[in-house]
Length: 235
Image (cartoon, rainbow, N blue to C red; front, top):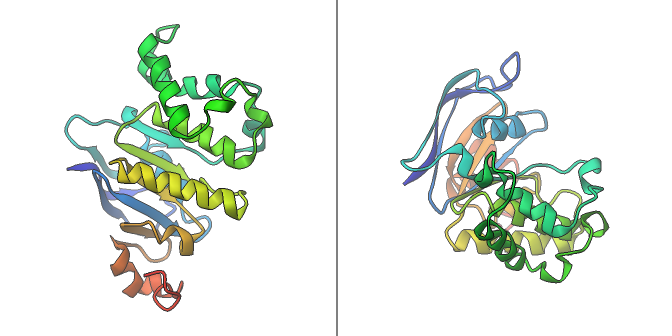
């Protein structure tokens, strides 16, 4: 079943970022990576799918029984966010805010969900530690746990490994791969295409050229040929 369908979608603020309309869909259990040049509109597209930015034209529709409120989102981190003065427990609990709505407290079930996702990301021993004192990789695990509190079906990840050392980067990729194998669909923006491509089922390339298709089709496309993925052994 399709979770998201984008048809004739044009994105931007006051003027279109892309010179062509986007047409793509994301299925249950899919793993889509979004690639393209800097300034091509990848983050804007992700925010449009979340209804944080309005589309200029076109349609975004969701599968039966699914809505934008059920999407887990891990945005790019800013310096201010990395220095956020809260505990791991508090940061992850904030991911349940969508479930709580206007209710000024979290239920026992929501607290249990947060604890389960902290454990899922291997961060139990840091639960009462300050988020600001964690390493970059640990912070991303906490934010991933937070995003999982909002969804069981779909995660949107905007360059989740940016700024991480190679070891932490590969650990996070493997965690995301494990979530996908459990049935969580992944949409991930990545500049590190030679690594991210190992995990992709589908690729959306945005920029002067638009491509959407399977990872194997991307290898043979004009857009994908510039990365020389086939000869580098990625596929």
